[in-house]
Length: 280
Image (spheres, rainbow, N blue to C red):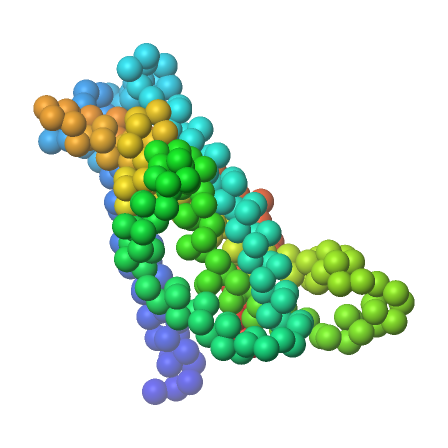
């Protein structure tokens, strides 16, 4: 077989695999969109391409007095925004300390952080539940944010630390010769060069509250404090409920803020994903 035909076969195989994965990913999304446009609330009569499509379910989510979807959306945006900001602040300072400073227990401390990440947050939910109850943060968005921030520290700090290690230390030394202090080096030299990995971590942090169900389900009890995942679950889990088309409409709208953040950060994402955690 000639090299030309071999190259064509390899290229055909690659495109076939990409097409197959595209269909696997897009098929459930197209079904969800089709179900959300079907009139009525029954899932069994819904079609992937509705004959008489309607936006009544999207209108119901925001206009009907009995719907709390707008409130759940607001709660999720609040949790996602605060989680992103606080996690970035904590993890960048922690990563900078492990990357640039030499102190006793530095090496073992980093591995201890990774070891903690090996255990899922749910293993400590009993302790966290009791702690939040003592602090009066149970059934509050603030308590949920604190758990999210704490659970995101180990892995994200390790990723950012790996990226900081790729930034030459000569830049730090030159800045110190010019009279720059630690905070000035951190904010004016390190952070601008670390935008790619910060964009990746910001996207991961922002996405989590929109998709996570277990933690909000345990921490949040009041319907007015629900996030979207818990609220939509209860929408279809109520006794005698038949809100699957409304559930599909609400699920489709979850993608809007995530897509907006992704588009805003996309120019940094590729380099951040490939460069993070390449050096420890």
